[in-house]
Image (cartoon, rainbow, N blue to C red; front, side):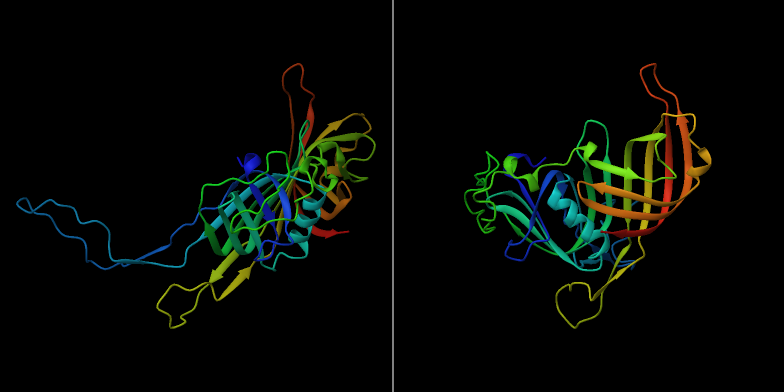
Length: 304
């Protein structure tokens, strides 16, 4: 958890200007060292009864360019809803920077980031939330032990080498653009699927894309960053839970849905060509409402 002393900036510049602050509840930015191991026989031996039983560990190896596969979870705000919509649709092939800052001298600037998975969710008694996984081709890290002056939701000082002053006079808890959006300000609309005979109880939409890094021999004595990045086609999965409030509801409409609109505050995503994968109507305890759970593959996407 980030708590009051952490900060995540989305799509910022190298000098941390111009970013959108995210109301993160968790993040993870490990650096995985990639090892290239030889398949040679060096390092192994055949043991006879009278041989020294000292084990030989591993084979010859070198380390390659590090892998930075990161993730973050956050509550959606007006600003971050627009930013994430653009990242999904308009900028999925454009690298961005994401800064994850723990305190005033510790943090990571993750550079040239591409998303691999983004999930938007809304459930009863919660905010609209987002879970995102992404890779970063490069990173810059700082380590220290001082804290941001951020206990009232206001950053009043710079952040060590991460010099941030974009919110120096703005309290997070008083800025409408930075307030989290509750689930009841998200609306799913579809005349065929929902209409006037059903209500949406909760929903989850997951976007995915494959990112492949390709390396080349650049006659360098050190590991090199990827020469190019390949980005695969997007996949979209949608899960919707409905409360059927009228016997007039037509179950024949659930199998193929031509159009569905998601409205988060005033940010809209338009989905088309929804094909049903699974449906279930599960019973529960006497206090539970029997609901219709639907899982779709989606093949069309646009935005406002």
